[in-house]
Image 1 (cartoon, rainbow, N blue to C red):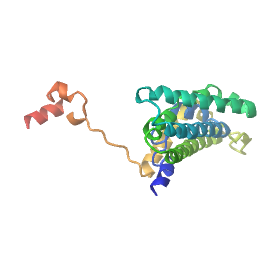
Image 2: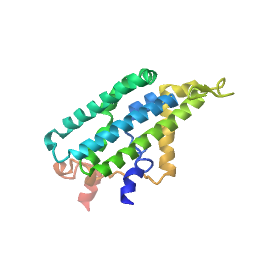
Image 3: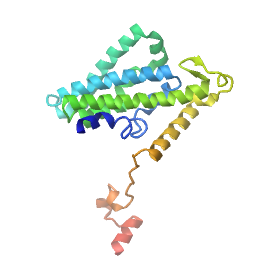
Image 4: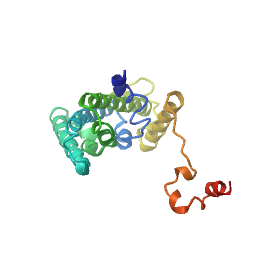
Length: 227
């Protein structure tokens, strides 16, 4: 059960886009079309899968002081290979994704899973974690792209939808519409999902400067001092 949780958590409970709010830039940029969203999701999932496997396998070999540069080199090599394959076999997709395909190198989801999970766990668990996060990322992109393309452009995967084709809401395909749909989906996940936002402690206990100020300069510190 614990092994399966490594896969399932990335789909809803720790969805990288709608819960962890990572990879926002490619999410907003490529979710205007369902085909583009699926292409970006597939490319990111492939890179995430193989990078997690390699980093987990080499976790005891890579020196701790240079682990981040090593991760970036590995990820960059994988992204280059994926980009070459896309250019060769799906040139239209490569043209549509543009700069966001090579920018997978610095995608927070991939670097984050490498640092937080793959570098600390065995290969099999890291592979499952990568697949779960990749599927969660792709599903979030697909959901956003479906809403934006259907209601914003009146099409689905490029095919016109009767009635909506002549009565679409164009702003949904633009940046403001992307942020609007993104916010609505995050709100829906927080409302109906099991995930609950963590409440922050704004008192002295949660302040990184509490030891320096002596806990007497802020209102909560003064109240504590008086007691």
